[in-house]
Image (cartoon, rainbow, N blue to C red):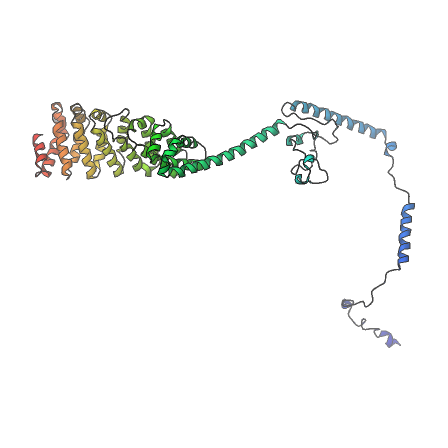
Length: 480
């Protein structure tokens, strides 16, 4: 019997405690109580609820003590005082931002911002959540109210008029939108003008339609894209005779193009403006008008800003010397060549002395050239230049020496020293003009001593040694 009690009653008792009920399965589903029993339980629960007495809160009004009532009265007094202060502040701010205040008393503390509902949806007071404006009927849509009223301690009526701040903001936004649309239109116009001016067959039509005036106005816009296109338009217009003539005739064209060149750090704008100014100097009989309008200063300024455009701008100055007679303010061109004579660029030196050579052919300008410092510029150019450049220096000195009124000033300002530098060259043409200039300067008997001191005799000796077989040159040296 004891042995049977110790034996396990089933296979489950033989399993370890940690593994019991792991793979246990129910072969029969447990049954719920009968429907009648469930219905009786449910009926009893309903009856129990119906028979219970409703709970009620104690009447605090009767139990309030005198001390509590005093505290409440003080609290009401403070609240009324705060409301009175808020009204005074509101009256002071009505002049800056007039709003209609609701006649209902505000139950909120003025230190707290009132709830404004769906501000970003339709600006209505929707306490239940967001209602999208697209889902409302057109008649029921509420227009946006002033946002600045959120910082007041009072609520604003839904039918209140819009404040001046709203109207000003709306006007600013409208002006901004209009300005953006206008800016895009101006960009499109500038690009169109640049493309049309590129073709020669459009020149006459553009001149008739006032394209030059339109481009000048557009170039004053503070927009990089418009400036680039206007500079390109000026460049194309200046290369065509009808439009280039109109640019020259416009009194504001040179100044406008110059301002455009300095309005941006874009090299393309400065390059196109420089090309336009140089093309304008190619127009016939335009030199005097352009110099009066300040094209010399404009080209010099562009050279100072863009070193790589120096050669281009010097060609524009050279074009101003290709004239048959002198014109007013031509001394500006002479001074510019003298100023550029100190450059290290040999091509610029050659162009400068070529311009001086053109001007020296005009008899009326020779004395003016001597006064404006041409001899000092020739000395700088002749010191370290190519033989072709030194030859032109000799031609300029020969032309100036042809005028008797200039000879004394030439000797006193060092013309013989320049001729001495050229006398050591192997160029027979340069030596011929050097000898011719010396013999004409030698007619000033009062300056002979100065000429000897400036090595005039040595210069003639150098020329004779190099031109022994050139009769015309050796005869000049003998006559001197």
